Image (cartoon, rainbow, N blue to C red):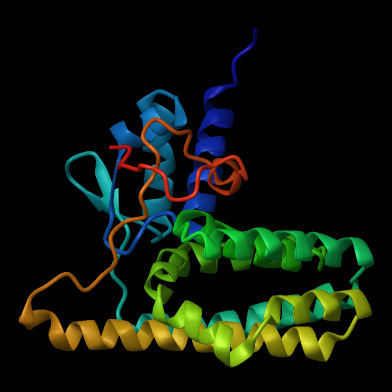
Length: 262
């Protein structure tokens, strides 16, 4: 049996790790070690090291001297900057996606939304976060603009970990304030209603990142009081393959015994 070349393996690790970061599977400030990732991905340390160095060079991770890296802690101003950029980029992507909308695309969005609702009702934050990312990926992919998608992915690498700060208050508050807004996106895509889809995306990006920026600002003001202000890292099933597919797999037990992989 042939084995992937070192370059292919490095790119696979980079892509999978990037998807996990964008999907909120690492929390702000969480440490990432070469050894633990190599074990999770069932590969040697070399492709993991190369993938980490690439993410460090892109400013996604911050490097440490002891063969590890961590998710940077962003300032409120940095979150606000990313919010402003994402508003322009993702509203444009949403408009283009709606223009190309089909019944099939809408059906995929609804299927992901149903999975997300089940994960949320079961209290499975790992799957919930991954499916938030998956839904947006499926929407923007419909625009069929690969260069635009790469830009969006680079922005989500910076903000994905901060999805953790939306739990629990924002997540359940938005259900009351906005209702089933993902269904409205699916319906907008199905009907090619660009204004409806863009408005939902605009509200989602603006409200969520404004909330995150405010949480970080409040944490900065209170840090001298002590206590843990950022969320615990998302727990992973010990020994489980660390991929987005494993996170969102319907066979995962909701609420089972969990532990850190490292």
